Image (spheres, rainbow, N blue to C red):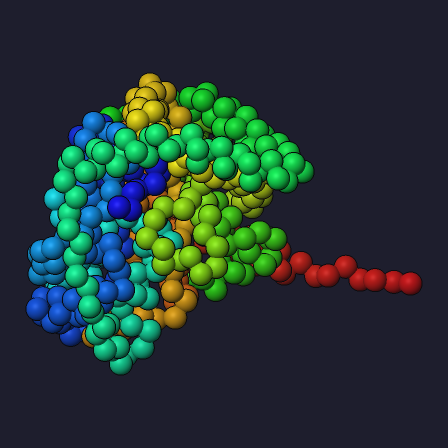
Length: 472
């Protein structure tokens, strides 16, 4: 039996603790026409099932939380149930598509089935159509979710033949078997821990360096226990969502990156910071220096692990400098804070904490997740996740994908989240908001676009300054 990691299981536990959250992630591919039929698309997906084993598995809880949930084969293998279809009302523009995405992502997934769905959306203007790819966060993180575009779709207009398929579902374990195996695992945990300690002690220098970095990162995390300044960005949420997007040309972002000495991620986070500043000002609130702390996921995957169906992320918790009005200074401050978070070992500490959790008995780990979820503090105000997508166009049934729109879920008291996704020369920001408490997510999206434009203008000014003459 393959168990969920503690991090993957946590996404299920958060749903159990919060009736208003749905922790599925998604991306929406907009394709050139004509749209295929639901039956054609379902047949295409059926031909790719052997490439994504999680699409044929569902989650089983272990009785009394004695062990982490397990993946079990689903004998039904009903592809048609997972492929849905809907149409946009006229005029079929971005607003109508965003509303459909928000509606689809407001609904929790059925835990009794494999946790994936594809929604065919026709009626887009220009004869186009879209596919909403919805999977639960316990199955994939952003990177492995993006990799589905290579597994399920095609890299060229000529469709690949269906993958060879000799799959036979394994018998599902009984509840008694699940409980018995969990008890055995609990018994063996101390032995496994001793082996892990022994391997670390074999290299004392490496152990000391790792312990130092982890301790520094843990101290940096401890500083995050101070609540952020109270704003309307944090508070109770409902079950319904809002969704909108902003886009930027990757070529423009690279110009900014080269001229101002930063990374693409720095530019993206600075643009989001500018958007939150505009949103707070539009609400008549002061953009304080400690008003917006963001959870920034950091991928821990190495080359070749992109398609592994799992969650392999750590995190950083920087404040976004919404108090800085100048766009160039704001970008510089974003870069400094991200570098500080890395230097203080936050990603390393997050990795080690999740690694330690994997070697601990599951009952106390599960209890720890529940206690952490109910901490009555405003620790995190938003989430900003950046996922690199395919650099070259992808296709499905011979149709080219023109654009990919990312979606990040929100939960607890986080009312707004932003996902960043790069695809085929375009950087897209997907903004998720609580339907009732964040009706103005469009202000944030417009602010993101405006912040990129401001940086580009500032870049032009920097590039127009003549090089100083050199005399000897």
